[in-house]
Image 1 (tube, rainbow, N blue to C red):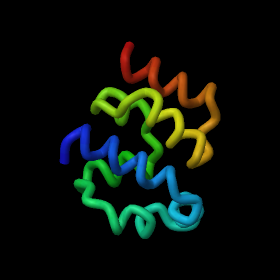
Image 2: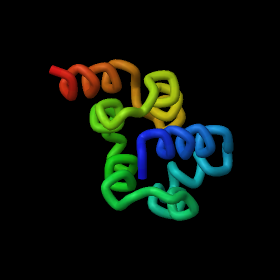
Image 3: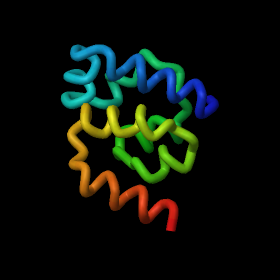
Image 4: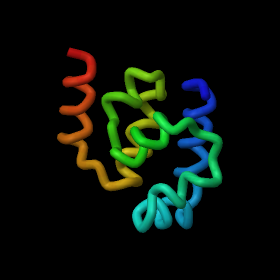
Length: 85
């Protein structure tokens, strides 16, 4: 999959409260309906914001996803700094 497609996937996921609730309960099940690669799924489940950022996820979309899945802003910023150091 491309970064563009993953950006669209995250926008779609974040638009649905039901999908985000499902993500909190079972991220694998929440992502099952999306066309993501194994590597992308692993990074999404791990909430690896640094990897997602360097992969090409738009910062606005990424921060919305981070907040939706419970990543605190200081932790989010730290992951980005470590990934781009």
